[in-house]
View (cartoon, helix red, strand yellow):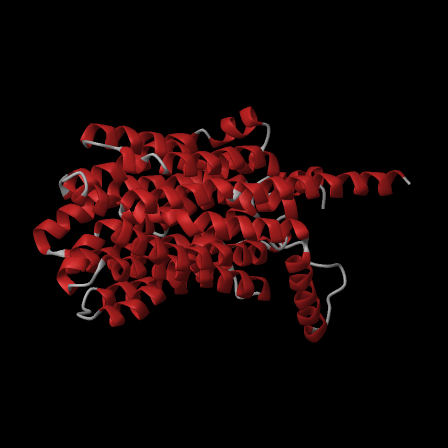
Length: 423
């Protein structure tokens, strides 16, 4: 389906449900990505309470992040099989409640891993269900603006949650703060879930229904074609290399600020909040920025490159003021990256199988994060924060090489399609 036809189909949909999905997706992002970006606040407290070294406590964070993207893959596989966006989002909320609640009572690091694994699966599944439902319901011409508004929830979560959980941790301890985190996340994710219903008109079902065995076989073939598409291979490699170092900045920020710069935990929380505020501004302007940069793929490339570049500057902050300024600049660059992933995938591969594409795409994010954060954490402990953080930033910027290759392949593919249509 071309873009004009997709816009016409989306234009025929009711605007009220679209607005409701935007609000519900906003809330979903507050309590799915928000806890991920604010989890660094808990790490020094968990590290001290359990008496574990930095690489092991970093592995707790990376396990949850990886599980989040594995949950996205599971959601991408089951949503097209008519399980539905609503059910996936709701059961994801329950998994978050159980996982974070169990984490709040562990006294051994090895018991923490299965807890954050379950919580991460729920966060990822719930988030993907909401984001795909929104992309499937809005016209392509407005997609950047609407998705930008919805993903502002990530920024709001990053602004508010670190401050809130830092205060609760100081007053009640990190365990009660984690229990409150579990209850609040589950409640709001479950409240948002019913609004992720996608009408049948959005699914673009084939004219002649296929038998169940034929449908399953067709989907398996489609998945194999997706994995063999050179454009998608480049995209997946970009995700893997980028997120090998992407989350290490957020994970190590609080520990770096407290150990290297001797700053308070409250100021560390303020840095996370400033990153969230700056990211919120760029996400609110996502439609305008996409237009100014000439399309979502160009803006995504520029944002990802700048995220890596500014991450390299973090070890060179020397006091509270320089760290706060860095947080503002870094947050401005980080804003469009996550928000644009679904939009770029929609532009390259369409929205019909976006859940599957997005789910498989996030496996690259998960694998990169699973390996990258502990490795960079070990490097920080053995060789210092400067080498570790610069390496993470270099990997984020270097991964844009795969985006350049993707763009070359995509343009060549488009030219061939135009030539074939003329013939």
